[in-house]
Image (cartoon, rainbow, N blue to C red; front, side, top):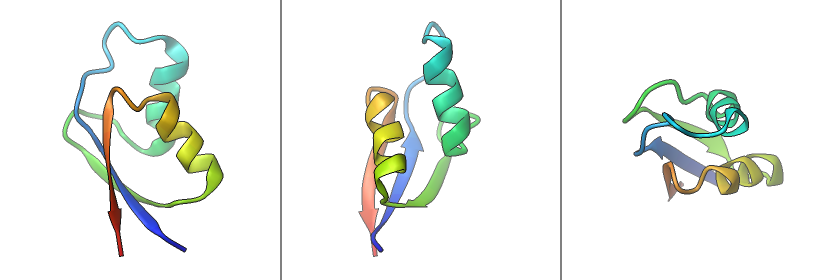
Length: 60
């Protein structure tokens, strides 16, 4: 399965609570933090919900 690297690039201040909880569910706690996940539909849906706050790279 493909892997993606998700990095938080914008602050979660003034975001709705659902988006803040989505960042926590992805494992992102602070600005500049990166996490690696499998590219399954659940993770891709969460990334899509907060796409304005994160950057995504495909890894091998």
